[in-house]
Length: 353
Image 1 (tube, one colour):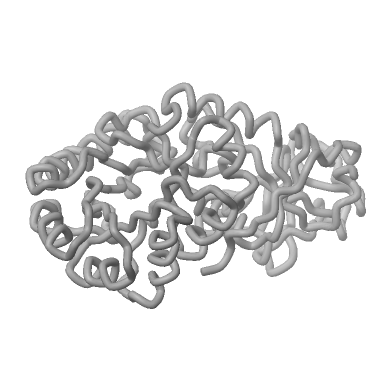
Image 2 (cartoon, helix red, strand yellow):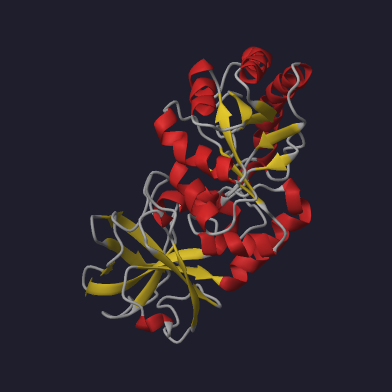
């Protein structure tokens, strides 16, 4: 199958870019030092590629993601890096632990999530600490007490978790590093308290944006780096955008200077702004369409031509698609190379809740 044979809109990954991103991250965070976050790519086939690169532990955002990873035989060490206060929701994860089908740890940040984890039959937790985002997580000065409470509930505390998500997207590297340093000092203090209370040595957190300036965590929870998006690309990181939604030009107005492709809000996440089309100015996105013009006197692509639309936010864009088609190289030309071979297809099998 060729790229030109795909029905559009089609989510397409660049194999060369993917391989380069994985190698770059692994050189800095090899093996167990990296706990890739499957919420970014939602595909067990892609996760298996990361196992082949030496990473055997993963974190997830939903129960469904954990269950899917375990069902795919990728359950060596799974962390639900999210709070779930409903024992019934967690019960399938407790069953994985009971049967030995997977090692599952969950994040806790209060008595409710501790009680839910224990009631569901889970055995291991991380104390989640709010380091300034704010989102989930306990106050840093409560971490030690929560570690004690978790152990009193019969749970093993593997360590401490904190995510500096409020700084990972700061464009200026020095400002980003300074913000991460402030957040990680909070996490380090909380982690010391957790260990003093009998908790374990793992300190987990961080993300793609702080991959080179977070020296506190013992394992990095990066996920977006594998395929990247244009928002992260603006940070000047050594990872390349390696996923695009390929669309077909369905209409154009030469006199008006614009063309329309079939990649709109239903195929893209827009919370980080408009997508990018190389050599073009994106005017706006509507439900099924993106309207754009070409820069620097370039001709509009013909009706039926294909364009690569690069998303600004990776994770929720992937969640809108059922599969990722992998080609050797997408290319940055408009229109894209229709003869590029589709090497394989990765099902997006960890979608939904």
